[in-house]
Amino acid sequence: MINLQDYLFNDVILTDIDNKQWKGHVFSFHDADDNEDNENSITLKIPDNKNLIEFTESEIKSIKIA
Image 1 (cartoon, one colour):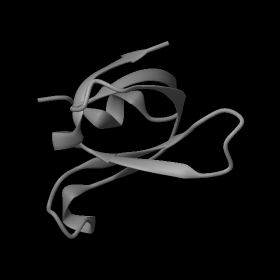
Image 2: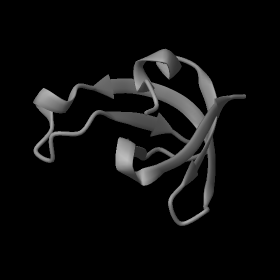
Image 3: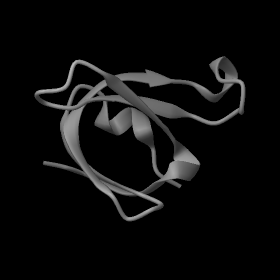
Image 4: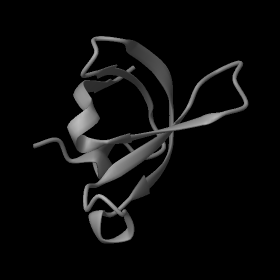
């Protein structure tokens, strides 16, 4: 299991379960108790994009610090 808290406030390269790669900054961490689906998640800020994207643990195939 990936410990998503380890990536908080870091620039990362994340590959989702659809094999799409995302590069961005981990903006926040959300504990499973705070999520409707009972999974930990992170919010990623993508450069040049004003939107934030949330990824749950089950949506992440791999993640590494950029």
